[in-house]
Length: 359
Ligand code: AMP
Image (tube, protein in one colour):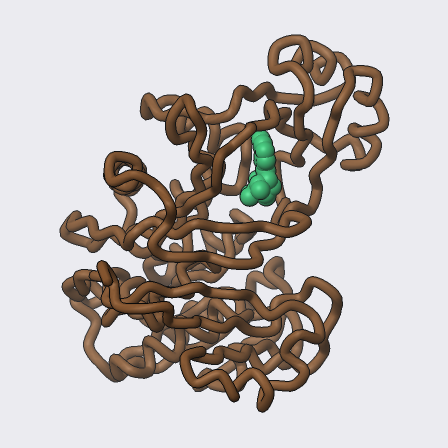
């Protein structure tokens, strides 16, 4: 890659969902072309991409052809198979790099990494079988949550354990896959920080957003979060620490629990994040443009929040009548172009401006 990347160059995005779509709209604004790679036909990002590769992630010939067609590759999700990543890296750079992917693909490695930085997490234990689960329950206590080490998202691949007698049932519920046992955190609230790091190591974080989940799926993000200035500063500093430790380039989402014992890191996502969608209407430079700027070797925007925003995800049939939603003049409507709605499926979101920042 010639650094910085010049307008007219082509960026490849692995994954053509809504995050890929919003990334490529931002890339287009900066004059880049984009190619999408996605196993399913007609992905949301495909409507706006210059070229779409439709093939499974283990089709390394297709993966190589995709990599040959672009100058740099980025991704919208973290579960990219290692073989695909390696095949691309032989041809062109992949940003954010492989280390962040390896760490975030595996909940045990992720927790060990966070702990290794001196940051706090929920109490946890590695689970490989019933015996290690029982040992883990002794250590972590109940209630606890059993989460598959890999391929979990939006609360999928998780089982709650209220009493040690439920251990075998919980293990069955996650198909006896390798797992992480986590103590249940009595958090006051959930927040997340969207941070960006450029190729020259500059770090910029957006204001923390406060997240409300329903059945494991993000429902709303509100900025400003109802936290103290000290908590906001801590959240931003620890995000910078994580970005620097990974020598990260791009945008990352860091999910945190606010507790009486301080901030606990729940999860890191090496990509643009649903809880950062508010930046589209709350900041001059949103998370999507920030990511494209970072991977293209451009200077970052400052990400300063100019407005207070409530972001609400539109799930299932909530987006079926967009004209009604559009009647609210203070609400910016973002629809993902998905034709089929299923319960809980993210179809779009609304950013409602609630006032000027600091007002
Ligand atoms: P995750 O997939 O790990 O991000 O979990 C999805 C959501 O489940 C989180 O945002 C929390 O609302 C809830 N959750 C996950 N882990 C815990 C925990 N250890 N204690 C309490 N709630 C949790």
